[in-house]
Length: 476
Figure (cartoon, rainbow, N blue to C red):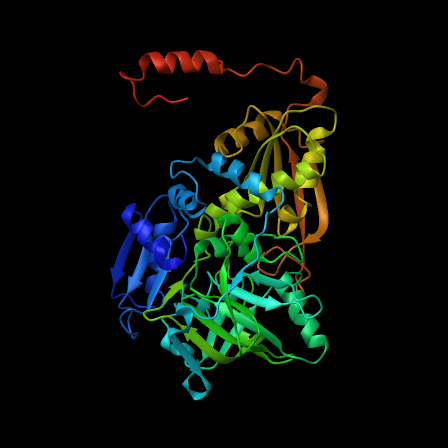
């Protein structure tokens, strides 16, 4: 799929899209999306004729809350299961094969260009997503594009972008994130940081922009490698940054040093207004490009599960798995970044125990490798007879195989964010504490631990095969 419109057309033909007309951008749109994203496999939502805005200025949301839509976006068979999607992304994450973007002279994003007094951010139907949000947000499913001043590395991140007025947007980036580090380099030189924000684009770009792509690797190149063809970009004459040629809306300007404006609160991915209202950097907008009848790609963070957690759980699980393998840790049979933790705070790994201390090694490494370290709270390691995506089985293993006296390891002062309501210190919340839970059979009892009361896989399969016509509800 080449752009957001082709994605929408594909999902419509697959029965994966519903169009809704006449909603209010003020909370109502967000409430509808929130109800849809609570359960997997409900359709994506395309909103048009939004109250107070021109017909054709649309918002797309609830995009990646079905395995089928995730698989199609990744170019995989639509019937792929969650763990099959994890394995597929693992193959890609082994080296992130890259393909540089292709520079083109023009594209649909240039159909309309606002500059000077014509700049009007308020023309677009940016939702107030949650009841107690302090701003409307045009950037939740966005791409924030920056270039490192020392190396010309182009970084793309997913950071929230608020609407302040016609010519000013707000920008929140957590400390330690690549985009923040780049901004601080410009500020240290007394310069504003050039920036471009795409608010509607090929969802495969959104996929990679929200992941922990290695420092110095451009997400444009990673997305090109994923698609097997270069991402077409235009070099902006305003910021010098590459922008997607088929983007729906692109905001361009600079983030000046020392100029802050109150932003928030905003309901975030863990389900809290944890960040509150606080001064945050601003974007002084110099230009806005947009296609005819532009579409905002919305992504609604909220109480998990939400539109962030389903696809990120799959991608983060695969990335953690691959990073542990590259670290030389054997025996891993499954990884799941659980949606209840916003795909970050609750990691579950199943392993084939190979030596004493193996299970604890896996847990400690998983919660500190780059893909698993940010804002983690709980890492659980189980034996390979447990499916890490089966929450009941995981809890059963914790209840029946974990000894609280020896199987809990607490790690203090780890990498977190103000969006974590338990982060500290209060004046600058950047740390959290976390626990690794070893819910595997004790190594010293692994040969004589009581047998599980369950038929063997071979016996189960034979019975199910024999009775599948008379009893279609029974499954393996």
